Length: 292
Image (cartoon, rainbow, N blue to C red; front, side, top):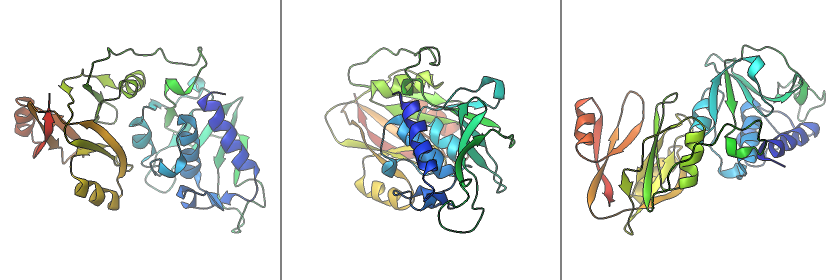
């Protein structure tokens, strides 16, 4: 069973249990009991599709879902019903209280968390978290799972191959979300490139020095990197998710961390790129680490 089919089976099973009703924001908790909202159901689906535990999966609402998933390699596509594929998330992205998200099953069927119709615990009507026929709710985005989550050769996007660089720190850019990504994981770099991120090479090499930690902001979809355990702790308290060790520092070249106050993006750059970014309005936050 592919990741997409496993994810669909999981949320259909969840919806079929009428002990689970619609509970606003409650579904973002690890137990998903006694219920969830639409974003929480999408989160359970996305985590299962990717094959990771929901407890550590980024939290999001309908207003931050697109940024959160594109940062993980999901593809954001302007909504067109004729182009839907089984397993797509259909998103109405609004900040006016009308945001909504459902999972497209195909054959004009969807599954989603629709609303608390009776004000009671559980789903007495069977219509709060349910499979049902499709309805038009002004969806404006489709979030498509990464190609590596599907083994259907007709459904996959062609894989983008990236040359493996020994010890390389790969750099990618998401034009739709405005985020940069740096990773030493070749598989992650290929998955992101396949999902539409622009591959910008492997400009840096890691060494055997200090650990560089990676953090993720579920509200903006952006990442940050630090060698400071104190900064990791403070960021987690502020709502960032800790994603582990990204790579280990080297000894030859200073890699600086810069921040864009308008987009919230962080960029890691050596000179002279760092100086050029400062001239363009980026804030230089100092040396992150040395690289080789």
